[in-house]
Length: 105
Image 1: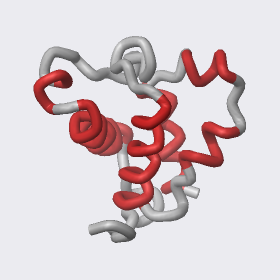
Image 2: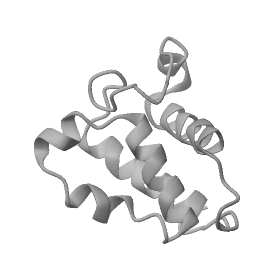
Image 3: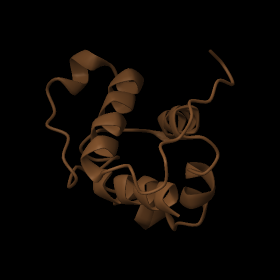
Image 4: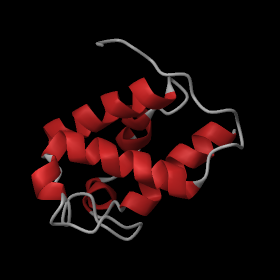
């Protein structure tokens, strides 16, 4: 449901593997499960090059992260602090580490 927020896991209770699985699922919802089935999403996968996410898909990902993890994971603020080169080179691993860090703090 729009505006729905799922309660974030207890601080320290989330693992990188769990977040990677959740992020992979979110990306699949955004770009399509059929397309994602042809890609092996790993921590080294590049968000723009390997997964071909574009700006509108970043917005959708930000919303998915907010719904799943709550306001503690402010993807928009995090990415707004990056230079264009950093965004282009962003990896799934960096995203996962960001989410885990937010949830553990």
